[in-house]
Structures are given as structure tokens and as C-alpha cells.
Length: 282
Ligand code: 13P
Image 1: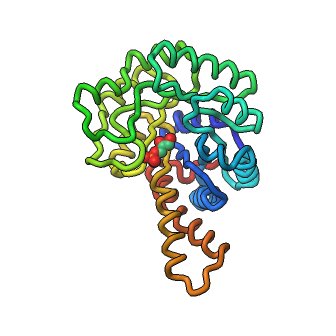
Image 2 (image 1 turned 90 degrees about the vertical axis):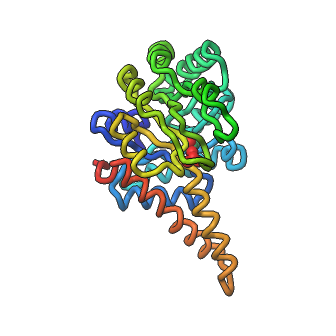
């Protein structure tokens, strides 16, 4: 069943669990997320990056929306990391449930101005907005401690940003990175607790792939309501598809697709368990 993202996140915040937002590029990934969510009786978010949208067009959003509508658990569809007003407009026109207005690469004032503009655009269509404060890198390699700290979310600024922007969810940077962690992850939980203390909207953590289980459950306990998961999901699918092609005597496309669905279901099921969202579908 297709539901607003805001509804999913507010329920998670009240009940102190988190919803997984899984990046999907293909039909196989959509099937994997929907079937894992259904089996776990868990809500979930199907999430599309602008890069995937460039290739798939609005048909990719339509696929996600239809998969959500026909699913036996509550699902929404979200546009991830978007800094283009045009792309956000296109996604909203296509009926997407929520968007991330990503001005995190901009100075505070310009991030705020862009985010407010996107909140106006999105709210007029009854949809919701996530923004990010702080800067999430793809890697921490070569960063000095001072530089790393400068990229992390400041709790007082987060409170001000949430109030001034009118966003519905805020992604925070506490040492999380996108993609592979090249060194053991170091999340600043003290900072997360301070942010959660001041910010009254659902908090989001990006860069979930590669985080130790204990860090995920601790972040949930401290108030993270949405986790973004990409790398673990797509690596599982790509590795399984490649292994199938190597091993199959007479490869069949639908068989390969099914192998990929099965492989991508595993990390989704595991993450749903850690997020505490299993059984929350009702
Ligand atoms: P990972 O690829 O590290 O799971 O991060 C996903 C993400 O944050 C997408 O916005």
C-alpha cells in the first residue's frame, strides 16, 4: 500500500524504530525490497537517485509507485540526493511521495534558501522534504580531524535549520560516509544524541552499508528514523548476477533476474531486523 513518507517516519519516531530506505535501480531491486518488506511485515521506502532517474526516466518512478500500491505492507517512494529543482519538479509531477532537497554542498544560507524553495514546491503538492546539514563525503581518506569535524552536523545549527526550513526530516553527518568505509566507521554518538535532543523532526542517517550492527541499533535508540541503504544491496545483486553468468550452463535472463532478487533480499531482510521495523506494517 502506498503511503506518505511523512506518515512512515512519524510512526517510526513515535514507536522508536527506523524505516529502511533502499536505493533501487531495477525491477529486480524493487522486487527484492517489496518481498523482504512483506515477509518481515515491515514498512519500507523505495528510493531513487537522480542518476537512476536519468536512465530510467519517470517510468522508474511509476514502477516503484505501482509496486508500492500493490504491496501488502506500507511503502513510499522517495527521490534521493537531488540538488536540481527541475528534477525535483519532474519527480513530483510523476507522483513521487517525497524528495531530498540536497543543498548540503552549499554554505548554510544558500542550503537554507534552496531547501525552503523546495519545501514550498513540494508542500503545495502535499508531499514531504528531507534535507541534509553537514557534508557527507564518499570517503574519509586523507581528512584531518579538524576538516572531518567541520563536515559534521552542528546540533545548534541543526535545530535552527529544521525550524527555519520547514523540512519534514533531516539527514545528519556524524562520521557516516557513502559507499565503502575504508577504515572502521567512527560515528559521533554524542553529537547524534545532542542533535536528537534539539531537533523535533525525524532524523536520517545515510551511508548505512558497512556500518556494524551495534552502531545501527545504537543510532536507532538515539532517534534515527530513516536509514539509507545502497551499496550493500546493489553489490549483492551485481555479484550474484555475475556469478550466475559464470556458472550457468545455459543462462536465462529471467533466471538471472530471480538470482539477483534473491541476493538483494538478504541485506534488506537483515537491515529491517536491525532497524526494528519488522512487524510494524500495521
Ligand atoms: P550506502 O551506499 O553507504 O548504503 O549509502 C546509501 C545512501 O546514503 C544513499 O543516500
